[in-house]
Image 1 (spheres, helix red, strand yellow):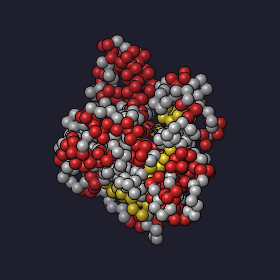
Image 2 (tube, protein in one colour):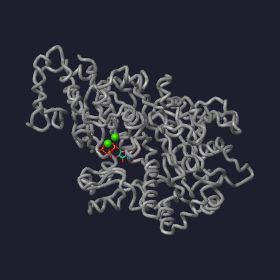
Image 3 (cartoon, rainbow, N blue to C red):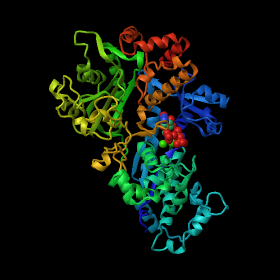
Image 4 (cartoon, rainbow, N blue to C red):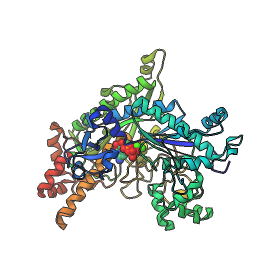
Length: 625
Ligand code: CTP
Ligand code: CA
Ligand code: CA
């Protein structure tokens, strides 16, 4: 076996997943040009998933529904549901669990996002090869399989026959070749995909190769409802015209830095550099990793994991919707806690585990970082009232208005709560065991991840949150965990850029990159195709809203005069994702407006109001449907 061909690794990814979930709920949407959109006030809402029929009309994710309808008159639109004043992803999450459950019958899987999973099929392939008595491979077992790089001349389109012919008869004997192993891996994946469709009704695509990077790449080559084998021998040709950013883990900062530093565009260009050169530029670990990677070689293990390591939810309150009174903060913490309670309870019933830690994150108005602070305490009971009151207790000292005041200063533009540190739910004694672990939340109990920002809190207090790399904090908390990030602009926050901590070696950290070749735990991540950030699936609607809001802002600036274009209104006050959006509740509105006038975004808001039409459209954007 050649170096880098030792394993058989597959990635299975659902086709237009949210669309298929909606189509199963409403069969009238099947086989139609159809999209899933979130919110509808502005331009019909933002599109987050697109059926392949709609893609044929040029409809893409991140378009506004109104614009998409111009491309495709009979476009059908399904809406993301809303609950507790925010997007409700329950259907998609549950559908994901169904799929994962079926896949797990075939292999040990690593769930890599809400709609995809990796699997290491090496052992299963060996077993099949032992059991296989035939010395000929039946092409009918590979009905939806394509071979990348084949046919080498133009004969049948999938390349299967030529590929099978190339597997030498000797390879069917004792010594099984890498090609044969991939082929047997493809049998297993065909079976798995057929089972997923049979059991759930959902179709998916897959990539079969020797590592995660190639499997992921292969999966996208012949979507939808097809699978692709990517042999190592086909990598050179493929990489010669493959932009570096298309490779797993190179979509973000590291990818751009490679392009800038080395002046190269395509993955194959990297083979011109020696390992020493790559190590010089990107550090030993990353350099070595890149040296192999550009040759299609990679060793990151598939890590068995089916369950998310944290369960959380968040909500944005941008600009004038920011929370400026204690009452509002309490109200929204309670809304989030209601969702959290519901999901935790379901999780306990289904997965037999309980979370022990509760993290609360906030962003303060004017703060450009994804999160200003996050703190955690023991999660003592799955009960919204308790969760929200504890959450409030651990963040209330961030309010500089003082205890006697109704105000919350500075106002909050994001609230986030999540539960983590799962352990098995006590079986005998059941709930009692769980409840007996309750510890009272005393002032001394809570900890902060706000390491060196001097506030009334003891920055030295132990922070259990700090250990939780790769959990929900990868999105919201990382910024606050890193002591260097204290002031805006001092260091750019890599928001969930990678789920694992940056390499610690000086050579690597000096570049500020977080290449994460040997990646840490991935969560339920989705890659945002606007900014390449990895975002937790359940934070995606909020994150998408950030981009939608930015688009909106851009369309204002381009349609107004140059002076008006400087009116960045509240939207630009946060230039780094995540997102902007807030719901507006009646009781909260008047105080919010007051703060607005007093607050730092006051002038911007006034300017915005003076823009007339724009102000009202912006308002309507932030209003609930
Ligand atoms: N998603 C989202 N916002 C994004 C990216 C993804 O809400 N910026 C959601 C989508 O709605 C999608 C699901 O996550 O259905 C999975 O995303 P992805 O696999 O990237 O795309 P699909 O819609 O499944 O389409 P494809 O067939 O290309 O995989
Ligand atoms: Ca998908
Ligand atoms: Ca996916």
